[in-house]
Length: 307
Ligand SMILES: [Zn+2]
Ligand SMILES: [Zn+2]
Image (cartoon, rainbow, N blue to C red; front, side):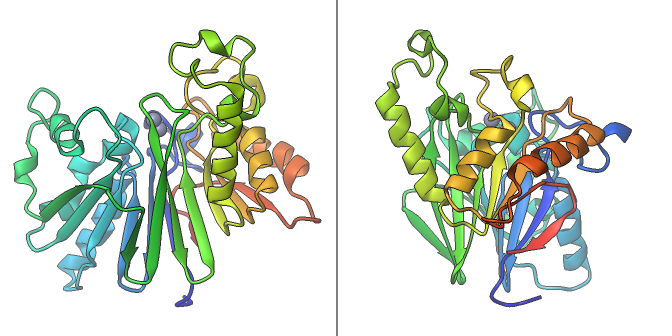
């Protein structure tokens, strides 16, 4: 493994709800969790059910006498599918482990209260005080955070109910971006009667164009974009306003922003492996071009790539 590369592993790729079973075993049924490793730094983005598997691997390493890296967990937002694995994350129960959890300050409730709420006795048998690791919860107040040689910055994204943060990680000249849970189509192709929409109707066409430009600037030239592509264009017509993008929209924006490769992410729970294989063929033909050397693939649970 090269020391000037980021090693990105997908522990959960499914959107909205875990989907175990034979129809989803190839691309995976666990909800979002991605780890980014570089030397002694371990960054995790999102704590969907996939984080349980990562936790098992980390706990195994501790039991084998290995020194555990300090854990930096960044949450994009606190919808169930992005936090539900946290109570099952084994390192959180290991004394001596240091764990930092970060999230956007731009929410109505305090991040710590939301995470504690998930482990309230009405929802879960044990509460957060049972975590033996040293836990620090931060609402991010800086524009950028440095973790070892990694530089992480972030932005708030609007077109997802309740909001969501996107993250960009840089190592030297390598860049990866995680921008899940956003309905990009609201910016590229707003619905005709968008003013009537109670949640985003106040955002006029000019503001949507500005937000799109901001998104493109954030992902520009990235070596890897992990992007929301929950729906095919046909499915999307029935899911406007649900806060997720159609595959062609995220692919077009990635190409326009000179992204090198797009990992389509947050797969719709009803989409089977064979459907995703079909998407790979159909959209691959449409968007994988020799001229730009753009590549797109569907994120698969267990996959590690060097960026
Ligand atoms: Zn989600
Ligand atoms: Zn969400």
